[in-house]
Length: 435
Image (cartoon, rainbow, N blue to C red; front, side, top):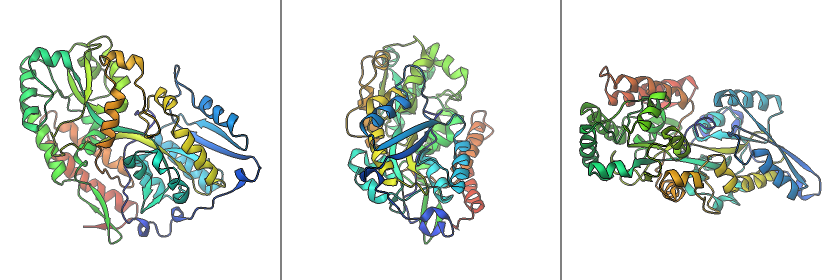
């Protein structure tokens, strides 16, 4: 969910040479304190919602502490913005008083790695690899080394009002051409099966455009940037056609007009992250209650059955933790507390048990087991890559995307600007770029 996580995924290419001179390439110094009978004290900083009605993090941790007297954990919640938390962690690592564990968005991993904030826990992580979906697990790897374990994911799916679709005589489209035709049919009746969300360009647009055509790779110790490849071009073509035919709404996602379009029945379908399910339900209110469904995104953007990510986060072991072995033992336990994590609004990355759809969600989505649909979407996620400083790229994409809504720009401009901003940002980080 957007309040507690940034976006997906870390580049697993040959990255080590780009960090020479940085502190982030250290080795694991696992402690055996917990095995020797001594009490190991760990600290964990998170930014989960911890709202009323949820299983609070402190209560989850209390269960661990009760059953593990030799490994005691103290959890603290960081209430500021994600970037502010990164700044604090950087300061704390340098001062030698950083927490052992910290929540890190997948899109933040390259940055905190480059800053030298992460501890290599590859050997310990391997013990727990089978507890998590392969894609999310790989998001915590850089150059084949692992720095923590995944917690939740944000696969992109399609939300739609089944009753409204039936009334219009349309079905969920499977291809781009079917999408365009269905969108035109709905628009002719004042309904829309899609919303072009300029404020989500750096997240949804990037996730889908990158799902089958990775933007960032490393070759010969230099970053190779290609944000304007076939995936991006296919995405731009589809949405430009929808905009030109006035067959999509152009409401930003995080403004009152989006909620209003759900509540008045104008918006009857839209792409969103899995974690948006409860937010989507709240935004719609009683409008369409029981009529909404979740399904996989069709082959609308040249991705076939692949989808992209929007959100999700992991928990990393921070540099110079005195007890990485025990930290990973607790972390595996915590990130596999599936019902508790679901209560926090997460789509867990753990595969140890199936997440059950909360009853209030099920009521809104007509009794559908949407958690099962989200699991399918997790398995359908393509290889998404991030680069250090991607937040600057995302901000530029959002800015450019807004111009396409009034005709002062084109959707394709988003990806051209992403190319320029990516190269400039990497150079500003002092990293090599292959041009």
